[in-house]
Amino acid sequence: MLQFTLPYVDESSGLPVVRTRQEAPMPDEKLIVIYDTFCGWCYGASPVFDALIETDAEVEVLHRYLFQGASAPKMSEGKGAQILQTIPHVQALTGQVFSEAFKSKIALSETEILESGLSAQAAALIHDQGPQKEFALRRRLENLHFGEGMSSSNRQAIVDALIAEGVPADQVERVGTPELAAEAAKISAQAQAWMSAVGSRGVPTVLRVTDDDVTQVDHQSFYGRAKAVPSNPKELETV
Image (cartoon, rainbow, N blue to C red; front, side, top):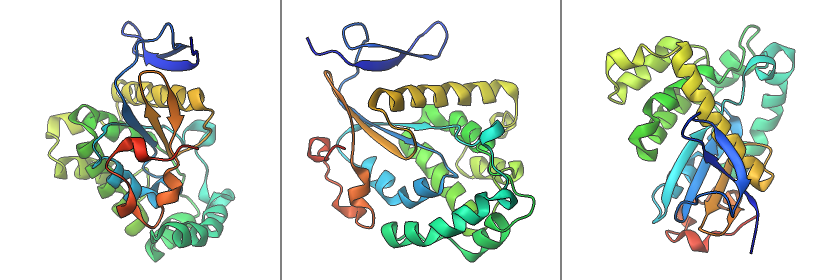
């Protein structure tokens, strides 16, 4: 019998556990899109993300808590220069434009720290409403960050984005609380477990999960041509 490691969420702890295929309950075939709102490559893949959730497949989206703690870089300490070097490549490959406001206010900032905490919490707050709603929020925050130069730590702007997506005011006040941070961390840990199952070390990662296999989808082949994403997930090429 075929064996490979797959993660599932333990109901008692809410955390992902990696077990073999023989031990783990499997969902029906679906796509899993793993992303981070303020990741430049995820922004580049944004049109492909949006095309994937319009396919015939069941789709789950999981937000990574990519930039946190020691992994939350300060732009003036090298991260900004790295981003500026990478932007022309991402733009040429994907067609996604990084604005001058983003370059001046974020990449060239002396104080900006790239941190995923608030965006991960915002995604967690809206996660149960489904991928369409979560990705509507993602697009709104991408436009603010990569288009208008909004700081990733601008809590009020993220709260306003949630309200604009119809989240009640009493719920958005949870942004920044330890409880919501813990929910975001669980989703991120689940995403990391799925990534580990296929040996992926970064985002964006797109997976196709069936009743007997998990494979990494070659989403990059659709950069700059998202309309070519097939509606049938079985037609997607794997890495």
